[in-house]
Length: 125
Image (cartoon, rainbow, N blue to C red; front, side, top):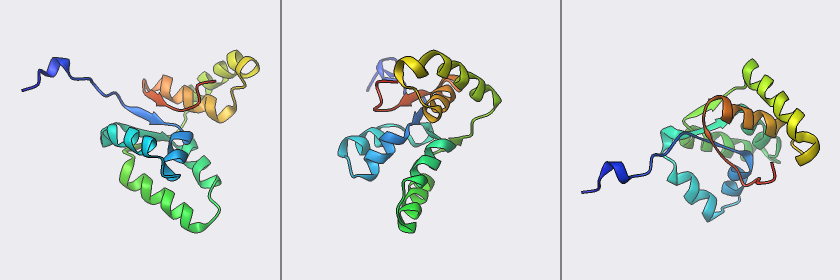
């Protein structure tokens, strides 16, 4: 029997848009990553869902995004005033030096404010 003290604890994870785009492009790596996070620990931001819908070219793609969300994401976090305030601070610090953009700052601020791990392939920001 495994010793529970040696097992890794999985913290809630907010999935960034790029991870989900790779999932929809049938990336085995993205699929394995998402499946490795327990369902109740999978979180997205409303901004991530907006970016995914914005990238859809056909109504069927929007339906696919919605179906994925219903089946695979436990919670969607909507930025509040404290998240927006933190995002402004992040932009002040990193927009010029790293090219941090508004939506990315809001998603990062959401992760920080809710003490979530951020899953992203964007290592620059």
